[in-house]
Length: 240
Image 1: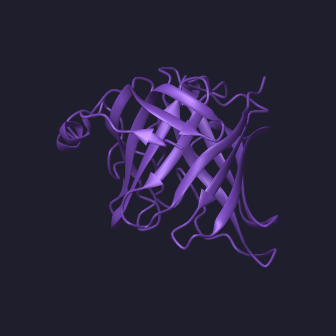
Image 2: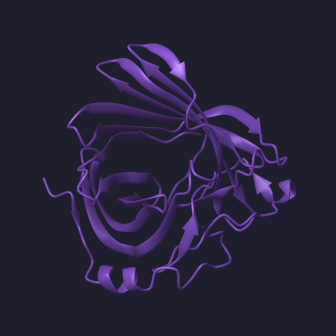
């Protein structure tokens, strides 16, 4: 099965990373966000999040362990410390039917169409029992800052931070190509796909390519750092 085709522009765009940011946050700098500028109606074409939407992924980690990931847009909301009302997206990771991690991610969209990531409440499990909440953070608390999950106007070379909690969550991304990629996953074959490259400054060797389809959202993620992990979309159900 053909999983993806890379554009010849990849090398050129990587060389230009950081050259364009459209005013989006980059590192650990604070951002001042006005709750009046945000909505719970997330309709960014590359990652629409209407309540009831569900994505199911088959994920294989670097050790070869297979996991099922179910991502659901709930009707629930969360008022973040900075006053923004965010949509709760529930992410359930399981192995052989037993939960490994259950996370509530918080997203909202600004008036320009940028989808912001505002933090997460994590529950980590071992043998089906809750052990800790490592990885949790909330924008506006203890120095944590909001980041961009999907820009309104993705273009090659556009860079942005995805999240920032010093020493814990400092992920960044850059858009590689827009509408040039072809991707095949268990859910289907897609053209005109958006490709991004994710990196973690605190873990320089960690790099990941992600692919998004208009009207669907994330299709495929592949670690390119030798870790070998990947997640592919198995099914998608649109919400309201």
